Image 1: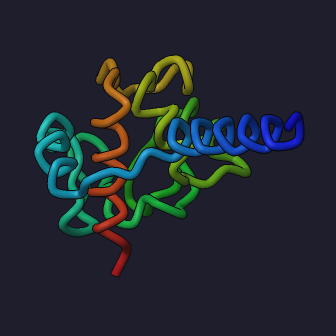
Image 2: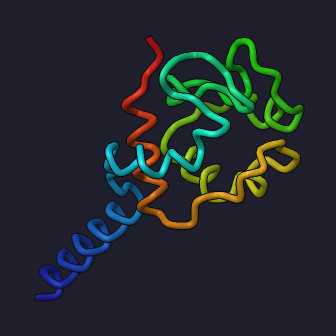
Image 3: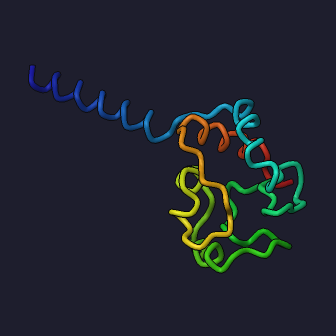
Length: 128
């Protein structure tokens, strides 16, 4: 009986931690959320606006998009890192907390669903 209970507890813990850690996003919903970002960022092509193009950002090192002048804080932050779902989620939630000294004025997204949706939208716009 105790083995069954232990197995059930372990399975429940794994399910809860997996769903909390890797929430699947909806790219269509992310497009709507991305409107908050589109005044400064672009995903349609590599053309920069006030902020760098985010086309192909997944898998790219932070602070290195060709032709964009990043803050020293972002360049320093990016050394040895790659924008993956976890780093993007942390940054999108609290840009200034993650990269102290960033020039990005956006306060961040507080809703984990919106963050997951934006990441799904960015994933739908890989580099050509």
